[in-house]
Amino acid sequence: MTWTVSPERFDSPDAALLRRDYYDEVASRYWGRPATAEEIEDGLTDDGAERLLPPTGQFVVGRHEGRAAGCAGLLLVDGGTAELTRVCIRPAFRSAGGGGLLLAAVERAARGFGVTRIRLDTRHDLVEARGLYAKHGYEEVPAFNRGPYAEHWFAKEL
Image 1 (cartoon, rainbow, N blue to C red):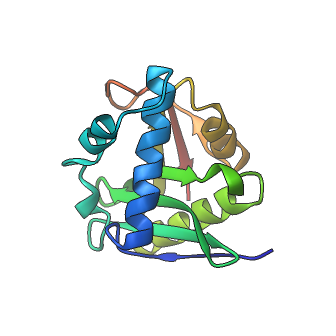
Image 2 (cartoon, rainbow, N blue to C red):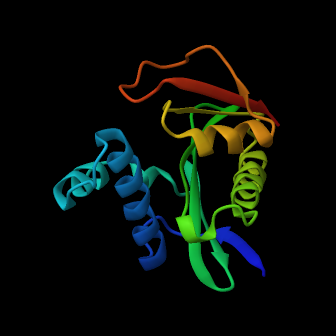
């Protein structure tokens, strides 16, 4: 079973569906019920995804056996720091190694931008994500923002 991960525009058909899946999952978990189509649209509207293109960032899509299975984004913060965002693996493809490959691809892109530190924030309920980050060398750090959904902060030196 093979994975490929490559840069892709955030608004390509596969990337757009993956971003929709991401917002569906995080909103559904947050509300404790299936997210409505309106809630998903609200999450996607003006979400800043257009910055996930060079020179301000990068978006990558992971494919498992040719099927779009996951995504991750990188957003430049300053000359040496970037934020990891929109990391999502569709449930059918979890625990198959794709998460680590997505992180590695984003880290390669970050190095290409001259970034030396990647940071991210996440929530209590996104347990699998927190495990993925810890497994791949991201360490919990003090809060660096006050986002409404930020409950855990991680960083990794590249």
